[in-house]
Image (cartoon, rainbow, N blue to C red; front, side):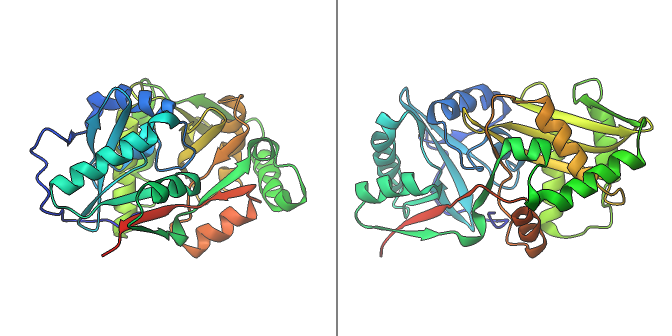
Length: 309
């Protein structure tokens, strides 16, 4: 998770090298994401646009690659280049040349181990730092579809209790332009007493994603009990084999509601996916325990790369 930032460095972005990313660029960014086929959660179309107000993006477009520039704690950085593997080196060197032109320290962020190793080999005067609290949790999607296995017994118990308590009262439907305003109304009333800055920004970003339903390549599902929305989930494809759960909200007073929306979602969408990325734990112990309890298949480590001074 990136810390909310308020300021930027003096790099002049009025130059034609990098120009702001807007919703008009959704198709362009997704086109290059598909070429890259990354599985790290920050390199995801929903994630980019959910946080675009807090973490503005700029783009440099080339036939071979797309460079995305972000800001972290007042400093610019580039994400992994969005390109096919044969253009990776070309893209990295171009990014370095742009930073050098502006006399700005060259930083790269959200790099996975494989791409980190490639970048370090290409940029000898750099050092990589693992972002310990940013690792993604990746799961066998079939286990989460069925909640099978001894390690998921507790979640299976919650799910079965939910089904028993609400038998005959549960319906689900895809989130569309016709019902997204109902979802927004539910979100408006969800955890209204929460005042943490990150929570407020995250919720604002979810409203933004709901406004982009029909424009973003994502799928959403809502769950009703007695015709009232009690949970919803929005996800997307991160790679050819991986789905990603981007947004998940439910009535915390209902036992098993989160297990129910997850099982329903993963059985409704992306049947070709074999893995599901549930993103990082944001350094929160409660989230860390919950994600570990789901029995992750693997973790995706992330690195920040900096020039040595």
